[in-house]
Length: 349
Image (tube, rainbow, N blue to C red; front, side, top):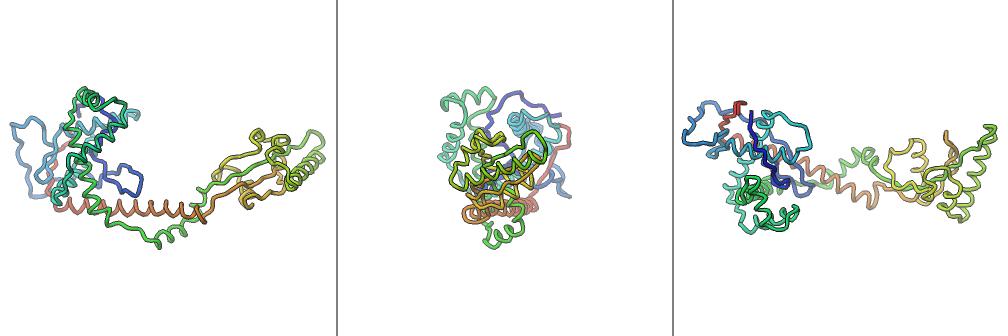
């Protein structure tokens, strides 16, 4: 089993193994492209160097990934996800070693492309991340690092590697991904019904409840009162004030305001009545098991105008993300195929 240090690690620390993400979408971690690759046939493992005290878990071309690097990566992950249940250590080791191999391959590609991250870029990124922490200054941050068994140089190396990976992925993947207007339109038409369910609308409501007494007479009386209230609104009466005075719904105290609603929040028959209205239009009294309802539609989002522009932007992000992930996976597989990877993780750490 893997032995972990009990130190806490700053939550912002870049986690070894996160794939670079496209700039046109919110950043999110991506899974590794494959399981840990096996040692290529005909490539016997080199005997371990007895003078090396840190165990080598994998050789990626000429670079070694050591046990201490894996432990450090998992320790960061466990700290950042300490609110979750304990995960199996061997499973984590497999997952993280695969991701570390992917990362090392990307760094090597960046070296081949002569991608350099200067000290000023690293310092700028470090300063931005330190700002997000509850520390007074950089000196206090360094003290915090030392308390966790980390050094500033270690942190800077992590940041530099992350920036290099992002730069090489930008060059090899991101710049080669594009989404056309025709693709956006095709996606929109194929998913219009689903997209419309996410649109919101704003409505007001008056509920007239039948009084106690003979059922038929009480319901008829409620209908007449609802018709009179509707007439008052049509003749210029204040809907909000009438709702406060006469509505028996919980929204009465807010002038009948139901707020912004997502489609599907109300009963389907009621929602259908509301959405059949134009903004500013008043419904006829509508009977339900509760009483008679009067609705006024204040506004509704549609797949037109600004709503269409916003939805198209979201579609473009979805399609870009899908293409980016597909191209990134293909690129990682390509560089893996031409690499010599010797994995020495046998499940017994």
